[in-house]
Amino acid sequence: MQMTIGQYFPGDSPLHRMDPRAKILCTIALIAGVFIAQNLWAYALLFAFAFGVIAVSRIDARFIVKGLKPILFIMAFTFVINMFFTADGVELFSWRFIHITDKGLKSATLMALRLVLLVMTTQLLTLSTSSIALTDGIEALLKPLSKVGFPAHELAMMMSIAMRFIPTLMEETDKIMKAQMARGAEFESGNLIQRAKAMLPLLVPLFVSAFRRADELALAMEARCYRGGQGRTRMKQLKYSRLDAIGAAITLAVVVAAAII
Amino acid sequence: MPIEVRNLTHTYMPGTPFEKTALDDVSFTIGDGEFVGLIGHTGSGKSTLIMHLNGLLKPTSGEVIVDGLNLAEKGVSLRAVRERVGLVFQYPEYQLFEETVVADVMFGPKNLGLSEAECRARAEEALGQVGLRDAALWEKSPFELSGGQKRRVAIAGVLAMKPGTLILDEPTAGLDPRGRDEIMGLMKDIHAAGTTLIMVSHSMTDVSRLCGRILVMNRAKLTIDAAPAQVFADEKRIREAGLTLPPCAVLAEKLRAAGFEGIPREAYTQETVARAILAALGKGDAACK
Image (tube, rainbow over all chains, first blue to last red; front, side):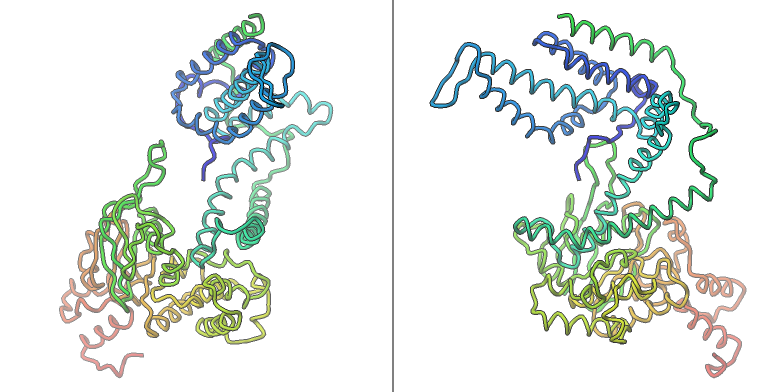
């Protein structure tokens, strides 16, 4: 199974060592920067920064490329839509109802680049941060909202449980699929309806086991006196370091520069 | 219908930091009617190996030949392979999904493209084979059954495909002593009926009770391939593989060391050791029991 979005790539680079809160905030700033950036130079700067961060993180570039694969279709789609349906600007090519203008080409390119940048930056966050650190960071950042009744801890707990079980459920899916294939089931042939029907022998056991696991987990949590977030302390305290300040400063500089150019 | 494995190597996730060689140059042949025990510590590659035997995994290099069919070749019908080699996974009860027991057992034969009546007949036969003869049980939901019953239904689900070779991965895991005995008895019957059996386990005791040949896996390599008596004679290598001798073989060894040289190496199960001790004490078979 191929899924690199949300996968953690272990390492000990400065990017890995940054505080998850700082990384989340930097990512949000970069996403804002991507949307503010209006011309190719700004994009060039953002790309250069992203590649620089990849180099620093020592994450295998193949992982990033693999993560881009799922959005290839969306990229192609937005590119085509933007290219064909931008009417103003100088016409470059025209054939019957198809008109391609310089502005259309430019906005299509920018749109595609924007998507690539968005996925790359968010991937850098998830690849360099373990899911536990990530949810800890989200919880800490949302904490102020709990004053107005927002269930920050519960949300973070649900997220971390969900993320914790993604690999487990994938493994389970793989196991059940193999077991049914050993009984002659085929999951990859036939038309849409046949395929949907073929999923039944997979989905029923998967749901049964997911519910069983949920029950067991709830029991195990209660057995260890889990009573929600109130008064709960952490073994690993989040602490900002110099590294975070440096990272944030560089990111901010890049975003501001991208906005100004 | 022999199974031939030649220089089989399998690497998981090659080219990533999670790369792991699960099988390293494994070769052996299993002939018709054998009862083979495949044993090794957790993560030694047992499960990866058996998944190659019915084409669920493709070799990274090397080949697997079942009944003359080379599984690595293109165009080999996997369905034909799965009809020949049945595989019962660990905790097979988690694969049950149909509304009734009998419908679940019919799933395999149906995938072989058999008629409804034929599927039904095979399902009933298989359920009888695993000792679930009570027809009232057949129409129940598989989720209503006890753990041991569920497991037997799952085994019936594979038996109904009438494979010439049956592989069971840890068939007794998580069962109480009685359930364990029932499954062991069931395997003995299936073997007696002419099916080649491969049992995967990490319990030497279970393997020594039934198997005529033992394959020991250690860290992706096949380290021992011999009859039980020879395997147990080489305690050092067994320890290296992270395994222990069955208690009865240990007892026999200790007695031999203490001077009872009459106890043969061929005695390693509860029954044979008991007989050998009685014989050494000068008492006949009659005293056994």
